[in-house]
Length: 43
Image (cartoon, rainbow, N blue to C red; front, side, top):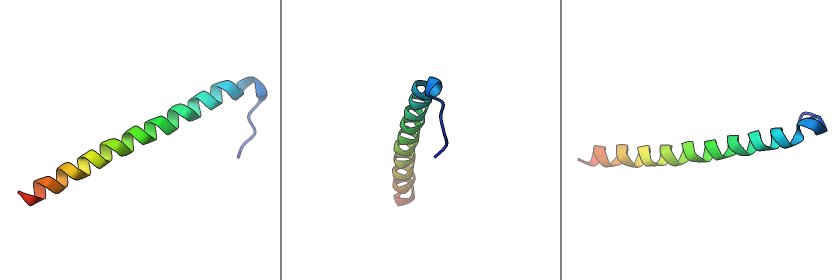
């Protein structure tokens, strides 16, 4: 883990939370796409 100056801590924490949320959303989209591809193969 890298050092974050105290003055930047709140902003960095917010950016990290946003990053994690984006990763979760992308994973949800990937799951939907995998399911759609799986269904297409069955046709």
